Amino acid sequence: MASNQLVTTAVKPLSMMKKLSPFVYIYEPESIVTPTTTRLRVPKLIFVASWMDAQDLHIAKYITRYQAIYPTSKIVLAKFVYKESMSPSLAREVVEPAFAFLRSELDAGFLSASPSEPEILMHLFSNGGSTTIRTLYELFQSQTGRPFPLHAAVYDSCPGLFSFSTTYNVLIINFPKGLFRLVATPFVTTFVSCLWIVHAFRFIIGENFMAVNWRVLNDLDLVKQTNRSYIYGKADVMVDWRHVEMHAKEAAAEGLDVRPELFEGSPHVSHMRSDGERYWRIVTETWERAITAQ
Image 1 (tube, helix red, strand yellow):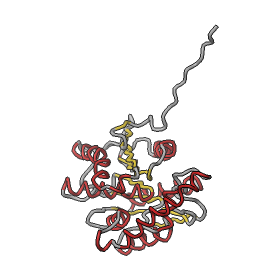
Image 2 (spheres, one colour):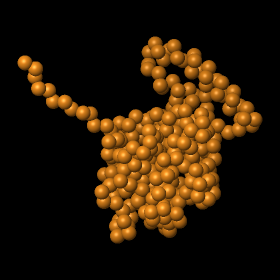
Image 3 (tube, one colour):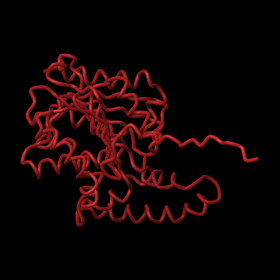
Image 4 (tube, one colour):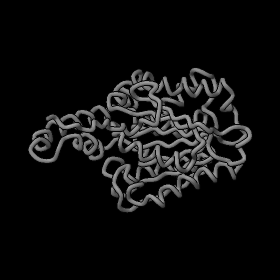
């Protein structure tokens, strides 16, 4: 006799969000921030730009925490895949649905194009998230003729500049440890060597995507921020912590309100896992500073 078996369907980590495209998701709570609830001083919208090829299970940990902290805030998630770094046109295509949603929120009056205080909290991860946000800023400027609206930002493990060791580490991690990685090592080394040669001739071929991110994220004609926090670590082998500090110093020199937060022992985009209490305190205090500084 065949036994009755319970058939269970695995719940997808991002099932709480609506999928606008393969790379863009939105979350709209039943109760949202309205003119009558703005006294709560919470973000109307949180924009999360994940790191390269991030797994949904890992991204969801940040989304669900934001839902718990700011239950009335809308959330936009934009993913990043490696091929975007090779093609600006593809990066623009991937970000387009997120821009379209934001523009619809502006057109509907939910968000203001020129708010007196920030309504958006931006949270970006690694060079992938940096590329997403840089592309969003550029797309917004080209399509609307004005910079992205005033906002606060948290930079997790970014931005970084090109270096042989960090680029090698980013690529080799995709191969399982053992024989497979051993076989892949000379090919990855050769590929990164070619990238290094190309980088050496950047005065001929132009900036690489990391250099563009670096420049744009401190371009005050495109970036209108009340303040930003940098969360980074010395144990990060994919983005040099010294690069992050350099960018923070340049931002401060431009007049931006900067908060650098160094984590001693946590690897790349693992600072929340290392010390979640400290991590989310930085995030919430970043937002609180944004709305109290106005």
